[in-house]
Image (cartoon, rainbow, N blue to C red; front, side, top):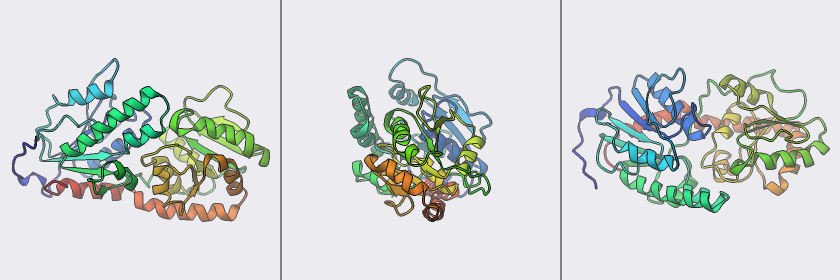
Length: 358
């Protein structure tokens, strides 16, 4: 299974040829993994490396990196995507960085094979609804385990992700571009505003947040508003709730700058990039205590963790306390520096050039 040629000179300090694998990209999906792959690929291309992304999604408009699309239709596309990758010619690359679906690539194809676990499908199976989806997550969980054996080195995006793969010891978080997400003075709304970024249904629990906001926050703060960056909300989302739909990059950055509080009460996040985007924008974070939020907020030291039963009262308390809002904003901003894209890319680049397995 480990048919690997001896190390050679290809991983020295010269620019690298990097192949990235991601079923998702922002051009075809709102899944956070795709956005992270796009950001990493862009950063490495900016540094002078040659980067190509192999994806089922179409190319991202204006991307600085190359793109190889693997066209698929019909059911079970993520599993079939992994099978199709076996036939991709990766021989010209120095590094293969897989963000999923590399579990069939057990023969050496590049000098360095890195795998990032953006969460655990086993963990997500505990929270997702529906037997069919639970079964799908469990199958994907076994594929993640196999992938850790196939790759030279495996990385998790948060420490709690290691629970399901205790033989993995590397943690490199996801990163955000702090030149895009940063505090902007003078844009905050005059009335208390909560921002949500995610889906109405599923584990993001946007619908539950809207209900709690309408039933508990609005009666206590009549001029409060919940702004929801989501595409699957109903026509009538509730009292005080405004649906923004899908925003451009610039519009999203402005939305973070305008809000008073960011709230994403997901039942599960392997990491949770929006938490860091909010913190870097100087926006206090309130969340349910999922794995990603606990890590990003330092178990509540840099944000507020609340049960769903207390979420309404927590939001009211935070929105009415200007001093606490300022303290949370400062704490979150300081914490966000640990998740800068530059820092994350530095860690990966060092890993790309390190020989051996680990």
